[in-house]
Amino acid sequence: MNSHKDIPVSVIGGGLAGAEASWQLARRGFLVDLYEMRPHRMTPAHSSAFLAELVCSNSLGADGITSPAGILKDELRKMDSLIMQCADGAKVAAGRALAVDRQIFADMVTDRISSLPNIRLIREEMTEVPEGPAIIATGPLTSPSMAESLAGLIGEGFLYFFDAVSPVLTLESVNMEKAFWGSRYEKGDDYLNCPMDKESYLAFWDQLVKAQRAPRHELDRDIRYFEGCLPVEEIASRGVDTLRFGPMKPVGLPDPSTGKEAYGVVQLRRDNREGSLFNMVGFQTSLKWGEQDRVFRMIPALENAEFVRYGVMHRNIYVNAPRVLKSSLELVSRQGIYLAGQITGVEGYVESTATGLMAAINLASSLKGLPEPLWPRESALGSLSFYLQDAEPDSFKPMNVNLGIFPPLGKRIRHRLEKCRMVSERAEGAMKEFLDSHPVFQELDFRQ
Ligand SMILES: Cc1cc2nc3c(=O)[nH]c(=O)nc-3n(C[C@H](O)[C@H](O)[C@H](O)COP(=O)(O)OP(=O)(O)OC[C@H]3O[C@@H](n4cnc5c(N)ncnc54)[C@H](O)[C@@H]3O)c2cc1C
Image (cartoon, rainbow, N blue to C red; front, side, top):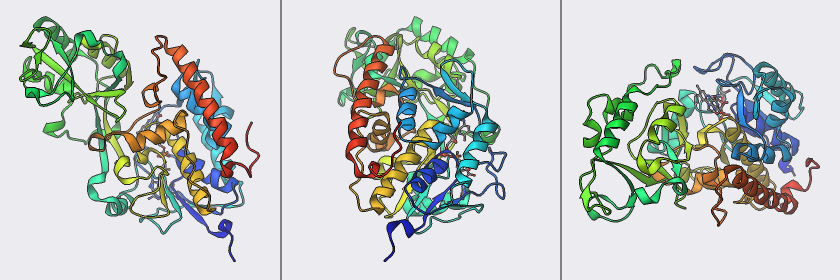
């Protein structure tokens, strides 16, 4: 009789998520067929044949447990992450961030993967979702035929090709003395409204039209915006009042503190079911991130806003995770097919790596007949995974790791560093218990 380890597992895509997933599966003794289409077929952003090529910045973000990104890195390191080992090995000086020499990094990942006897690296484009067991980690620039095949499996409407994201901020950073709850024409209390008087509106408009926009990436040059999804700065540049007839329309929203309609209103809509995160309705933007901080904090209720995700407008292929993925990252519509990386609806190098690791361990558990690993909600890994299930499906947007996706601490902590430290301590305890108790972690002596 064949053991589970004789069944080859296909991993499609040798980027950050695919390399991590292959490593985690191979380390557990599985035979892995890793399909990478480069160099025969390139994406519009990659330029080499190396695995885990970083297509843009060489920074993997903040390190150390005083940041959410650092907490995630810490958890990955404790789980024998290949990407973290190579990133640490290729590190260059960058203050509190973990930045790498991209060539050394990609070289190391390629070498480590190629040296494992149970990984077969196949340089081929996979044009269809294969028979399982498989992990699809083809990234934000998935080849068109694979994207089409996936869309056919999950439903056309659940695969997106473009991100038009409004900034997301934490509820606790909103000045509630200057905001009020209510839906237009008193149809409920779903929105948090940030009113502006004429003076503050005009000052805001003036800075918005002058603010610096991010340069458009080569990839995005040919993207034409839909009229219904224009960047907020573009709407503003059409005239001083255009926003007041669009996303900042005050009609039907009387401010309870004055009993009158304000001059303009920014509406915030719930972004997760827990209600800790809110997005700025109709504020999709391509302003530089520093400019988003500066200009959007001119809205009186948002003077101290903590943005956990900035607005962006760029090409990106990802699925509607709350609708099409199970908590294990397996497709609802096809047993044995898991997704990993940016295509799941996470955003960022380390987040993509994290879903590669989780998908591999979830799949390994399933093939071994073990219970599904329940990634602790208090951990960064568990919080990312929870977001993919819990986010509002109708307005689902990709997310990076940030304090807003962790469960609340139950008390208000003013200092961000202190808050991160407490979140980190809680996460560490939960992860330790998880790693000690789930059988999929017992057979490997990988913990540092
Ligand atoms: C232009 C751009 C810039 C970005 N910049 C940053 C940044 O600076 N910082 C950051 O944190 N994140 C950035 N991201 C977001 C994201 O973190 C990266 O794209 C990250 O590499 C995603 O990891 P991944 O493993 O999901 O995909 P990738 O790393 O892109 O890996 C996917 C792999 O699949 C291969 N592939 C695709 N289709 C097929 C197929 N059909 N068959 C076989 N192989 C296939 C590709 O060649 C590629 O090697 C950027 C994204 C883009 C598009």
